[in-house]
Every structure is written in structure tokens, then in C-alpha cells.
Amino acid sequence: MSDCIFCKIAGGDIPSATLYEDDDFRVILDLGPATKGHALILPKHHYANLYEIPEEMAAKAMVLAKRMAAAMTETLGCDGFNIVQNNGEVAGQTVFHFHMHLIPRYNGDQAGITWKPGELKDEVRDEIVAKVTAALM
Image 1 (cartoon, rainbow, N blue to C red):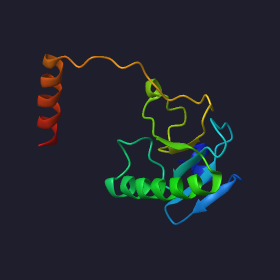
Image 2 (cartoon, helix red, strand yellow):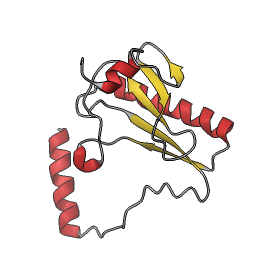
Image 3 (tube, rainbow, N blue to C red):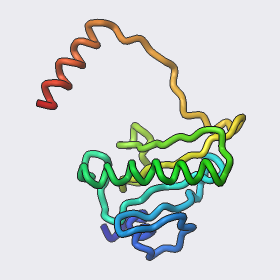
Image 4 (tube, rainbow, N blue to C red):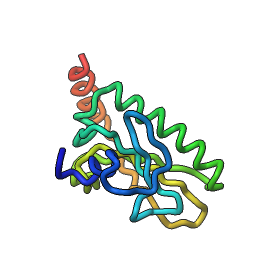
């Protein structure tokens, strides 16, 4: 997509601090990091979100995320790790090109990816199970 900033970065048209690159992906340092080492996995082909990316590319992205998390944990000495992928504005997606955030976590970093736990009521649970399992058939 010609006007997509992440397409331009992934394609090498815009310079970036690249940590890794192959035929399908570029991994770059985020310019607005949540923590030291915060990086993004960008597919080189444009997919707006998780709903558009083919399953085989989504699988490759997760394998790459695991590989990057291991290397980053070892080299940066972080205490934990978040892998975050947002879909839709309400979910926090701000650039509509599928990407995964690799966020090294450090004790006391205050980055916070949390929520207040709710309660799963039996009737809601049963409704969700019925609808989702039917959609998968």
C-alpha cells in the first residue's frame, strides 16, 4: 500500500534501526518505545490486521516473535517479555498494517499491560462457547 508508513519502513524506503530482516519481515526498534528494546515485527506485504494476514504468515510471525524474544531477553537482560498485537482502533491499533510489539519488561518499568479482571458468568460462558464453536465448524 503506497501510503502506509509501515509498508515503506518494511520495504526499506524509510530508514529504520533494523534488528532482523528476511524475505517476509523486518524487525525494527520502535521510535516511541514503552521500554528499552521495544521493537516491532513488520510483514513486508501489507495486511491491515490479524483478520487479513494469511495463516501461514501469522504462524511465521509468531515463530519470529519467539526467536526475537529469546535473543532480546538474553542480550538485554530483561526480566520478562510481552508480545502484543492489536486489531482495530478500540484495541489500540494506531497503524493499520499488521504488526507485533516485542516489549522487553524490566522490574519497575511502569509499562503496564494490564486490566481489571471481570467475572465470567455461566450463561455468558455458555453463549460464547456455543457461538464460537459453531463459527469454527
